[in-house]
Length: 435
Ligand SMILES: *[C@@H]1O[C@H](CO)[C@@H](O)[C@H](O)[C@H]1NC(C)=O
Ligand SMILES: *[C@@H]1O[C@H](CO)[C@@H](O)[C@H](O)[C@H]1NC(C)=O
Ligand SMILES: *[C@@H]1O[C@H](CO)[C@@H](O)[C@H](O)[C@H]1NC(C)=O
Ligand SMILES: *[C@@H]1O[C@H](CO)[C@@H](O)[C@H](O)[C@H]1NC(C)=O
Ligand SMILES: *[C@@H]1O[C@H](CO)[C@@H](O)[C@H](O)[C@H]1NC(C)=O
Image 1: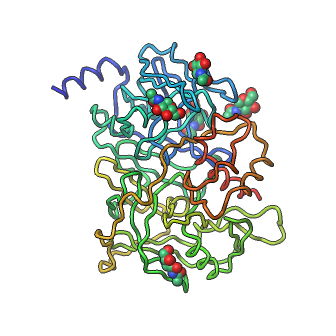
Image 2: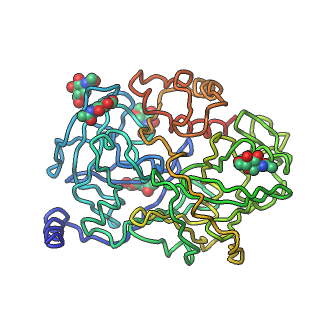
Image 3: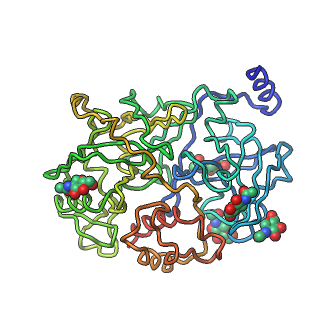
C-alpha cells in the first residue's frame, strides 16, 4: 500500500526519470566553504547552498530576506509548494515550507518530493545550507520529525539506500573540492570499503577512535570525534594537539593556529577505528603558506586545538585521506580509500579494537540548534577581531562554548545571535588562513 502510494506520488510530482544514485560537484568558495547546487520547487529554482554536517535539514533564504540575500526562494512561483508553518515569535523569523527538492542539477537530478525546509529572512554565506548531519536543528527541529533528507528520500522510494558519500580532492583547485554521491557509495572516486563504524552518539556522526600516534608521541586513550568532511582541519583537545605540535616543532601563530616549515616532512598521524589503523599522510597536514611573512616559509599546520571536552573533529586531512560514507539508516559512518590515495590501511591490529562498553552516550553532543548564517557585508577586520574575542577556555567548536557575548555577529543585527556560531567557527578557520 505504502509502495503504491509512493509510486503514484513520484509519477505525479517528477517529470524527469528518477535515478537511484547521483553525483554532484562540491564547490569550494571563498572563504573556503563547501557548496553544492540544489533546486526547490516547480519550475525549479536553483540555489547554491553550503554543505554542512553540523546541521540537519535544508535552510534557504526566503524572498522576504532583504539584506545581502542575492538569491532567494519565492514560494509563490512554485506550483508544488505547500506552506507548513511560520514562526515570528522568537529571536528570528522563519517559515517552514514543503516542496520538491532536487539534489543536483539536470541531467543528474534526484527529486525528493515532500521535503520540509526552512525559509529564512536572514542571510547565509551562500543561498542557504544543506545540512546533512543528524539531530534536530533550527526551526525544523522545533516542529519535530526532522528526518535527514536522504532518509526522507529513502522512505519515498527515491533512493535504494539513504546513504551519501563525500570525496574530497587532495588538491582543491579552482573551486573544485570534490564530489558528493547521493544514494550510495561513490564507486567512481573511492575504492573498496574499509569498514563501517557504528555511531557512538546519535546526535550526529560521532564515532570512537583510539591509540593515536604521531612521531614520538603516542596516546592510547579512547576519544570521540565528529566525522565532518566539510570541516577544514582536524581539531582535538589542546593537551594532545600541543604535544603533537612539539613533536614537529610547530609554533603557535594564533591561539588556535600552529604553523610549520612548509617543506618539513611530517610524521604520519595514525589512529585506530574499530580495530583498523588509519593513516594521515604528511602531505595532508600542511595548509596554506603564511603570506604575511613570505620569507619565513611557514605554512598552516592542519591540526587545531579547539576542543576542551575531548570531542575531536575530523575533516580536511581525514576527508582527503578517506572517502566518508554517511549511513544514517544504519547509524554508522564508513570509510574507503580514494582511488587516488596515498594513504594506507592496515587490518592487522585487531586486538586494539574499540571497546563498545566504553561508549559514552550523549556527553559530547553537538548543539544542533544552530544554522550557519553568512555575515556578508562584514569587513574582514571585524571578523579578525572577533576571532580574538573568542574565549579560548571555553571554545570547543560549534556552539559548544563560543562565548556569544564576546562573539557577537555583526551587521545583521540581533537576529543572528542565537544561530551563528558554527559559521563563526568556520570564519575563524578561514580567516586564520589569511593571517
Ligand atoms: C552550479 O551550477 C552552475 C550552473 O548553473 C555551475 O556553473 C556551477 O559550477 C555549479 N556549482 C557547483 C558547485 O556544482
Ligand atoms: C550579491 O550581490 C552583491 C551586489 O550585487 C555582490 O557584490 C555580491 O558579490 C553578491 N554575492 C553573491 C554571493 O553572489
Ligand atoms: C516575519 O516575516 C514576515 C514576512 O515573512 C513579516 O511580515 C513579519 O513582520 C516578520 N516578523 C518579525 C518578528 O520579524
Ligand atoms: C518559534 O521560535 C522560538 C525560538 O526562536 C521557539 O522558542 C518556539 O518554540 C518556536 N515556535 C514554534 C511554534 O516552533
Ligand atoms: C592522552 O590523552 C588524554 C585524553 O585526552 C589526556 O588526558 C592525556 O593528557 C594524554 N596524555 C598525554 C601524554 O598527552
